[in-house]
Image (cartoon, rainbow, N blue to C red; front, side, top):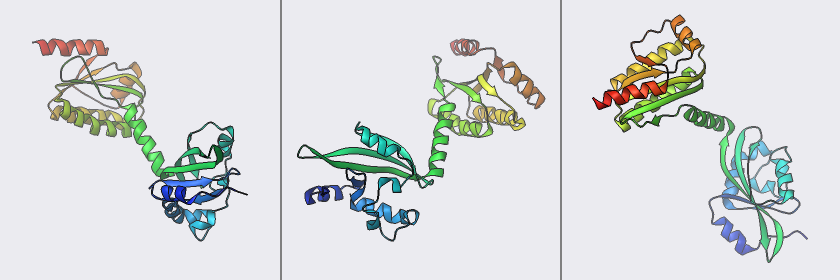
Length: 251
């Protein structure tokens, strides 16, 4: 006979705002707390059910076709923390723990966290990657910021950088901003040169001087061919640029 959750356990889990499901040892959904019922009601169209209660007795594979989650649970290394795609539309973070009652394994408690639209998750991941790809660093020179550009330079990255950099200039009362192009691998869009100039002009309006350094040869050729003209100081390397800034600050 399958184990049923005791009423005291159910009452405790119902007090939680997290989405918690009790899964029996055959990987069927045997119970869910009140928070989970609300979630399932929102997703019943994808499950082809009329009410949340209809999922009771369903195998966990009813939510996604992969057996990966089941295999991890059989492997027995708990807690399990994973991210899965549901119905090819939602992204969910799942945390699975064994349910031990009176020293006996009775099944599993599965918690669904961060249920989001897959497209929203992609956008959030993209934003995080853009943030990581456009770091803004403080340097040894006072009120001087370094922006090391790495990888492919795109209009989207420059837009993200502009917003972020202007904020950092204000927060750090920046006098100098060094933009290091040595890590750039690709510059093919003719509008990029114009956007670089716009970024430079915006920084200057904030009261900071802009220095360029580390231009790869191919990038220089591209910028010339794109008709980009600038009066900004440019240096072969960051070392030379920071030396210049330090000498200016000491005067």
